[in-house]
Image 1 (cartoon, one colour):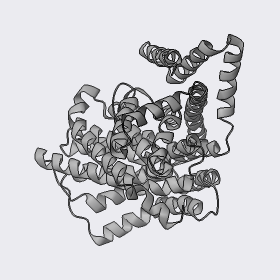
Image 2 (cartoon, rainbow, N blue to C red; image 1 turned 180 degrees about the horizontal axis):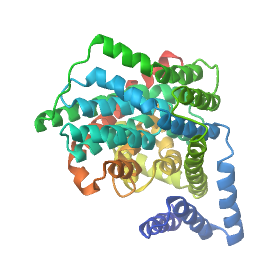
Image 3 (tube, rainbow, N blue to C red; image 1 turned 60 degrees about the horizontal axis):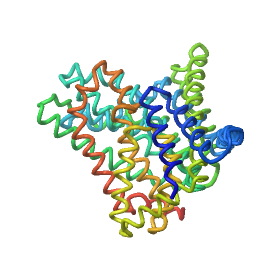
Image 4 (cartoon, rainbow, N blue to C red; image 1 turned 90 degrees about the vertical axis):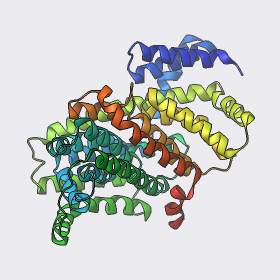
Length: 431
């Protein structure tokens, strides 16, 4: 193994991040410097540029801007309020009721919008003040909001699962979407258990029990929003339309729904389109840059060398998965989710497939891992959104975050070592 390209790649990337260079530029520059070690300047510049362009030349990637737009439409279209009202009638009377409402609402919002950032922003701004009014600490509310928002990246539709499908060389998007349900719900349940114990310990107020009539009324109000799950996932799984077509249908449905609710108007629609275009540009730049680095890694045979190195340590599946989990947890602290998926999938997927692991199962393991990174400094985007919405500081949120981290890690290890948690639903549909 030639260690010079590896050292150039790692050291240049870390140094660029350390001096505050944006992640996409850090990835591109470090990939270019690594190429310059092996080939002349002109082919190196040309190759990296080409790879950024060709990395975005994929029909499946069209789903991402559509799902981002549908997420923005949902966020502004009054859907969050209706989901929260429904969740309140279900668990509002339990210990830590408002915290549990946050988790369930985030899971429902994530399952519809597929965006952790949108969920953290919506739930934090709506439920945060209400939790404070009921005597909950601002930091505890922020911690619950931050961790529960990430469940939407596992529960479909999820842009990150589409990115993983691309990086893995064609893992079924329908299978990945179905595989995410049980791990996502399991993570949410563990967060609810921890939040309930914490609330009981701190003696936070308990809400009044809702009648069946109230539950039914809020369910009917939320039903048009929840139907989007059936429309999108049902259509993909039954083969009526592809994930890309489903994303376009989601945009049309949420636009009509937002207008019916009179939350989306011709006046605020341009801002929604601009916000989604801005988010799409960031995501696509990260994807293009990451695809260039993935190609450079392959050119330098780095994935094969790492694969051989890991398998030389042990051929025990439990040990290798533990090592990969620890590495991904570390990666998630310093790298955003999209580039991490694109860069590390080609490195670790050949290792786990040699050990007999299903690529769909590994995809869920990887996303769950990186979800934890979104809640940790210094790069945790959901952490910064949650703290910003709650108007508090990272230092003060860390203490209530720690037990919630442990809940997420427990869910991760159960999903890692019990593959049927991920593969049972896809197997029912022969995916």
